[in-house]
Image 1 (cartoon, protein in one colour):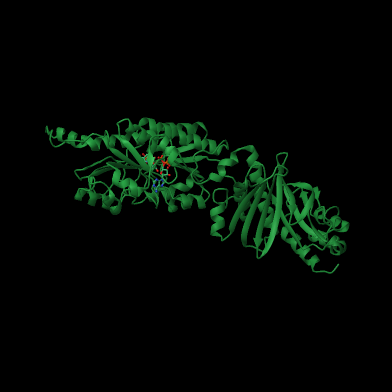
Image 2: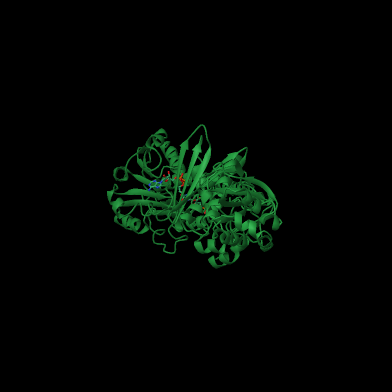
Amino acid sequence: LTKAKKASNTSLLYSFSILSVYLLYDLKKKLATCSALIKRVLISESVDPCCKTILQENGIEVTEKQQMTKEELIAEIQNYDGLVVRSATKVTSDVINAGSNLKIIGRAGTGVDNVDVDAATKRGIIVMNTPSGNTISAAELTCALLMSLSRHIPQAVMSMKDGKWDRKKFMGAELYGKVLGIVGLGRIGKEVATRMQSFGMTTIGYDPITPPEVSASWGVEQMSLEELWPQCDYITVHTPLMPSTTGLLNDASFAKCKKGVKVVNCARGGIIDEAALLRALESGQCGGAGLDVFVEEPPKDRVLVNHPNVISCPHLGASTKEAQARCGRDIALQIVDMATGKALVGAVNAQVLVNTFSPDSHQWIRLGESMGSVLKACTASKQPYSQVHVTSLGKWSNSPNMLSAAVVGLLTEGPQKGPNLVNALPLAAETGITVQTDHKDSNEREVCVLEVSVNGSSYTAVGSVQAGVPVLLELNGSVFRQPVPLTGHLLFFKASNSTELLLSVTGKGVLAAAGVLLQSFSASTVSSAEQWYCMGISSLLGDIGALKSLAKEAAQLTV
Ligand SMILES: NC(=O)C1=CN([C@@H]2O[C@H](COP(=O)(O)OP(=O)(O)OC[C@H]3O[C@@H](n4cnc5c(N)ncnc54)[C@H](O)[C@@H]3O)[C@@H](O)[C@H]2O)C=CC1
Ligand SMILES: O=C(O)C(=O)COP(=O)(O)O
């Protein structure tokens, strides 16, 4: 560049009215999806051996280490790309942040409350589970607890082992004709309902998401919790543990129940408030409880476990050979599919990625990232962004994916760490960027419009996918005569419409002097005073800073 400046100073200064020379970027380098290679996986709990076998068969190195302390896990986790857990491993933000190479956390089971999903999402780590693998087992254990509660089977067994023959003490009650309230009508709630109906129970329930007509089709009448509590002889909960379900059954709700109501928690400790349960058991408001799960596991405080009307298990809902085989196999296959870019199944924090596994979407994602990169370069000196808006036009709406992809392009600093499709939107929110997306149906054009606002100014890129290649059609109002393929190294600059100018940049000008070959050239259709140009070039210019200052210097001169 220095040479170029010396050699062609006059023509350069004469012809340049470049305001800025923008970005050179290598699109091939960074497609920030999460299909990064998974080479090493740590299994930190007792997961079916088929999990290890499947991972190894697919070239993944597996280490099994059970009962690690938090400190041990934090010290080790940086060595792994993937972590497979059940419910006992607490994957806290400390663990996640220590996992500098971590790309995936696989939960061989359903509940992900032991994983800090938000922390993982912010770090761009996929969290996936195998939600249907243990449904039947958890439902069967729930039914077993309901039956045991009605007939005091565990207590009777203990008394027999004690050498007693106490027939009076264990007088039970039939399930037949009784009302079972099911809170949470998802996979397990449904299976519990249909099984208990075969015992002649009336099943009623509540779920804020499952539509009443859907649950009615499998025999569960839905109603509000206020209506449900007083009708139930038995209540079973099957919701995830989250703020809205913590303490769902509490002092106030127990007070609304029939005296002697029996409750089962085979979902998560804390959905039935443990202290309120104890009070209800002691007052007789609750006639018995079947607990598979506890707030603290194992529970140090044994007062509930030791209560005569409580029967309990050490979190055995999923502990069957069948459930473990399914969950172990499913999580291994899901990790392999993800790593090889075949499919993304079971991701709980990366819905946007699910659609990126079709070749079609892949190119649109590349387009979004590339347009983000282009606008990032055009606005480099003006950041931070205040708003990012993506509009998709076409037959199908891909704007949510495009939005994440564009944010990846806008926020990416280097090829390794930073934003990807998993954490793009949380990162944008954290950075104070307002994001917006919409879609307009159109049979004529299939394009994506990306608009970013920086310091009150707005910058726009319009792109599309043509013949399987992402292309840029417009940049800040300049419509390119030929679509610009967003591939390889591209040099964008804004300049007045002048042949001399172009020669000074290309032919014998700056690029030639820097030993860079011009591979393609796109100018805008409008011959306005200033317009955007894009050049495909053979290699990255070593010193883009020098080019920029040269241009800046030139721009200060009156031509
Ligand atoms: N004890 C064990 O070993 C096992 C326990 N589980 C637990 O069971 C839970 C349920 O599992 P699935 O049925 O597979 O999940 P699911 O996602 O199919 O169903 C959960 C249902 O709860 C509903 N829900 C959410 N908030 C609610 C609220 N405030 N009130 C009522 N319903 C609400 C949801 O709409 C959803 O339909 C899991 O989250 C997990 O914690 C799962 C498997 C084994
Ligand atoms: O899948 C779930 O949500 C469970 O609670 C089962 O937990 P586990 O895998 O047996 O530790």
